Length: 283
Ligand code: ATP
Image 1 (cartoon, rainbow, N blue to C red):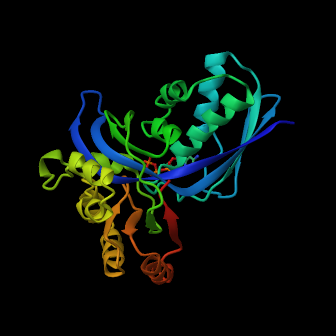
Image 2: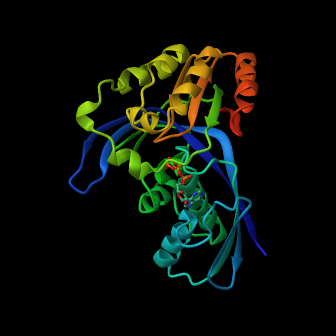
């Protein structure tokens, strides 16, 4: 039986700005999105009917609340398909951590079903379908480095920013994105990223300036509830990171390094206190 295996990569935000709240409740954002090589592995097999979702991690939902279910459902409805799938999610990306793990799994499923059933959808068509699952899904399909605007779905590809040393550390808490946006007071944001300046630094491959000028306006909301995020940021800077930031709505913190030895030393220290610490690279 045909089996498709797709990698689902995590993302970090090199900057995250919230511009305004729209009438429909969504927030208009401006973010620099960057894929990293921490990944879930999604295996897809056709079965006669319905959907079976399995995972190596018990925290991963296996019912219709899993975003891969939504991806399967959208494809079946669009193409009037009544075949089923078995999906195995080998989960390595921390859950509810600001790394878009669920969105990336859904993106992988759209790509995988496109192949499994020879649907002939282009990348752009997959991205258009993906936004119905979640605002981060189109980026997870596109991959690489991008400026995300609108609710996160309007994407502009940016120059390659690959092979940069990144340390990720996720404290043992799960943060609800909805909670963070609900508690964000747009009038209280005092420091915003200069997104276009950051893009210029990235184009010049000036990693030091990128690292030092990164801003995520959601940080204060999440840190207020979970001060450990601030502590990890400090640990990364003290350990030689050029800069450190919370990713998405948290709680994952990442540090940018230009020295693999310093990164490994910080990794070793953080691993004494935290179970989820990963040394990765941008892709
Ligand atoms: P984002 O950065 O896009 O907000 P996140 O990385 O913070 O995403 P996810 O890992 O996607 O968060 O998980 C958020 C919630 O989504 C979890 O609490 C989980 O119950 C649900 N979920 C649905 N599908 C998945 C999936 N495939 N993997 C992990 N969580 C999933």
